[in-house]
Length: 181
Image 1 (tube, rainbow, N blue to C red):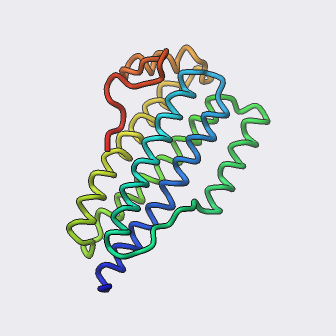
Image 2 (cartoon, rainbow, N blue to C red; image 1 turned 60 degrees about the horizontal axis):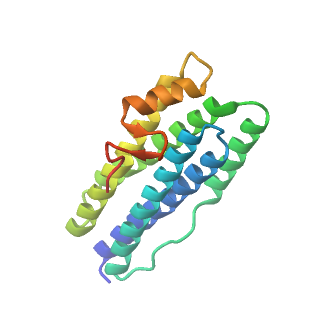
Image 3 (cartoon, rainbow, N blue to C red; image 1 turned 30 degrees about the vertical axis):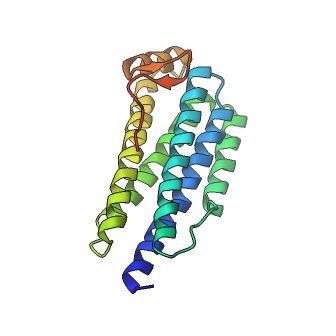
């Protein structure tokens, strides 16, 4: 295995871990909201992140590496913090703020990887496809947070946000296609 492949494997595996953390975070967030439309949205995001993980892992394997298959301890601690905030009355707004903070982190990590000039062409192509999904998820989470500011994060605002981005509240699916990979 060439050094360039090792570099790609290291970068991709780091993103695998972070993306697993993101999927786990969305699943936990879905458990911590009462609004069924938000729960469905977070579950959809978690599924999309699992698809990104699969693409990254496939590229690591194609390069001759062993793909990571676990999240990080740091993210587990973050989820515990989110549980604590929810337990002491943070409500839906607190969950959405944590989701958006996590989305800022993952988007920055993907942007850094995309700027790595030593990344091979095939790995860069896979990464670019995955980054589109990450960016779309980030943008939706950010829009959701901003739509909830000033009203205490009530369900009416969440529903209005979902209407504005084309989410079907009954099915929890996005009529606009959601983050695509």
